[in-house]
Length: 287
Image (cartoon, rainbow, N blue to C red; front, side):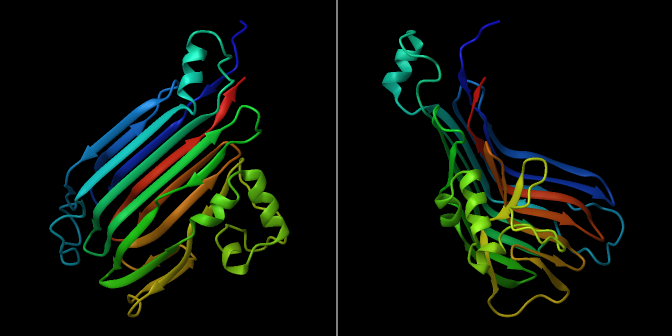
C-alpha cells in the first residue's frame, strides 16, 4: 500500500456523566456528546434538564436528597476542517496534496445548573479548546478559549475560582511548555502541575506521554470553608461524607490536550464518579 500523507481529525466533547456504584448501581448515560469522524466535520448536541435519582437503600437517615445529580442544560460541539476552504477544494480536485493545508479543530462543552446531592453546585461549567495543525510543524498548536467555572458552592459555602488560560496559550505545545517549566515558572504557576512528593527533577513530570496540569490558579473560600474539608491541591479538595472534587484538570501530550472542568470521586455513603464539561482536541498527520 502507498497512501498519501493526510490529517487525522480527532476531537470530542461531553457534557455530564455519572456512575453511582453503591449502595445501588445507577448509571447516567453521557448527556451531550459530540465527536468528529476521521474526515472532520461538525457535531453538536443539546440536552435539557435531567435528574439521576438517589439510591433507595441504606443510610436513609443520612441522605435527605430528593435526587442525587441534576443539571439544567448541556450543549456540546466538535468541529474540524481545513483552515483554507479554497485550498481544501484544490485537494479534492487533486491539485494539492492532502497534507498541504493546515487544519483546525474546536470543541466546546457548556453545562448549566450542575448540582450534586445538594452539596456541590456550579451554575456554569464551560470548556473550549482549539487545535491548529500545520503540516510543517512537529506539534500542533492547542489553545484554550472561553473556559469558565462560575457560581460554585460547596455545602452552601461560596467558592471563587480563578482560571489561567494564558499560561497554556503562551506555551501552546508540549515542547514549549516543557522548556518553560524547566527554565522556571512563577511559584503559583509551578503549583498548577503535578509533581511526585519526593521528586527533585526540574523536568515536567510525564506518565505514558502525558503531563497532568490544571487551569485553576487559585481557589478562594469567600465566607469560610465547609466542616470536614481537606485541600488536596491548588485545584482539588476532599469533603467528608461526600468525596473528592477535582476542578480544571488538563492532560497534555505532544498531540493533544484534554480538559475536564469538574470531576467528582464520591465517597461514603455513596460510591461512584461523575464529570461535567469535558473535551479533547488534537492534531496529527499520518504517516
